Image 1 (cartoon, rainbow, N blue to C red):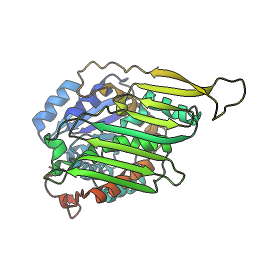
Image 2 (cartoon, rainbow, N blue to C red):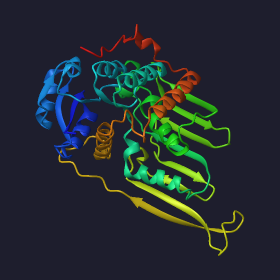
Image 3 (cartoon, helix red, strand yellow):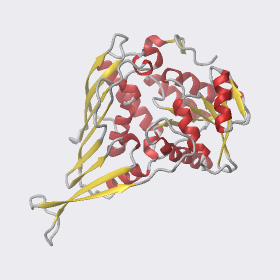
Image 4 (cartoon, one colour):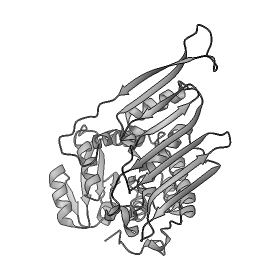
Length: 365
């Protein structure tokens, strides 16, 4: 396989960081070919900064570009569905920023289309590809903390008036924008299994976007999880896994952390483990430094997108249609859990879409 040839849909902040990561990867593995933005001037500026060969003023031009193998979609949330569908219909592999869509049925449709087209398709949950998350999976597989019984996650910051987060037509709302990170973490621990109980409360703004959500999830065997998201105040934004023989902490920012702290409760007696004997806590802090980019980054630990890019190439190179570390099944589960929460808190994006297209913000100029 020669270099994976990338087309970018969107030239904003998140695209800046992903391009910065591609820039430090071997050119015989990754090549930045085309970029498109609704403002062709912005596309040209982005192309000059990162060395793209072509710049377009329409997203449809990326879909039609024969030199593009895979498309990275980094536009506003409400455009993801239409743009991902356009790229898949034109036989492109797709890496689409989260949330993949705003509606469960759109997520189902895109995954079915990708599988029909036999194209690699990925919701860009970059968390899953960090070395710290590999350590998390390794620790859970080894049962180092015993039987996992509770997962607790929170993600929040004070930004209630930021348009992208507060306006429905831009796909705002804490559940879809940052709640996806909380839910994916819970599924990373418990596996791709739908909880039997999902209960949530939320606070909506005047546009009907949720500014905060608190949710609890429970499975038949008693395993449970809780998460909170908010744009109304700062939260520690850490994740915890509690087991019968220890715990795991993913420090802030848990969704792109470079660290994984494992605490094991050990029975210091010479015999086998006893759940009634006094145990001693042994903590190990595992740290995985990020690569260094040459171009300035916008987002915290943005250099970690390099792991996601490497995984996309590995999957395509091996003929995989999804990453085993972030499967289509998990993307569907996240969307299904979010759908239940939306119904409970009165959140809906239905009014944005008319006849399968976006009514307010035009996705494809």
